[in-house]
Length: 281
Image 1 (cartoon, helix red, strand yellow):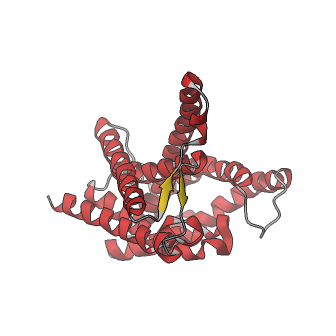
Image 2: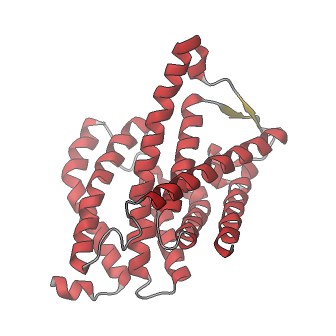
């Protein structure tokens, strides 16, 4: 298949070829890395294995995306990623909305007696040592959250949405891109991630809405996504919250995963409603 024919292919075929190319380019890195990390598929990944593999995969993403954009005569700007002050403002606004939303979610669950706040393990040291330990945790998770969110938004709410809109309406494109986004999480978590699939799909749709609200820019979606990653990763690392068991897991989230519970879904719906009202304002 020539490149000229490929650019005129159906959107789903181009998306399949994109992910296949990405996977093939990653295999020479992934195989020796998996051996070094003692990971044997389909065994679930532990965090110490997941992070290096994910990092190696995402480091390749800009080059693969650049190649796809070059073939179609487009750019990252067309996908919604540009570098200007307004984008940084959108990222900051999205991050704040994401963090505050999760804070409200956990405070409500605390008020209902479903979880309790614990003293973060990093603050059990004294004085400046506690502050230094906390900063050493929060800053890397912030940078990690920004990196992962920008990469995923560029792929799923940027490249995929643009491709799918060539064949489908914007909301159908969003639904398909969000389904792909949710299903690909099974690569890392396996069947343990199945209860989260509806929540992950809804999360994808909220982030599609964020791009629409932001006039096609990915800034708001990147900030929102980064805020969620940073807050959840930081709380998990600090062991700052613990579920009491008084709330049913179908409410709080199966396996301690917020998106696998009713409260997590309601949180996403509320976030979407705020974005919708913001977009209509």
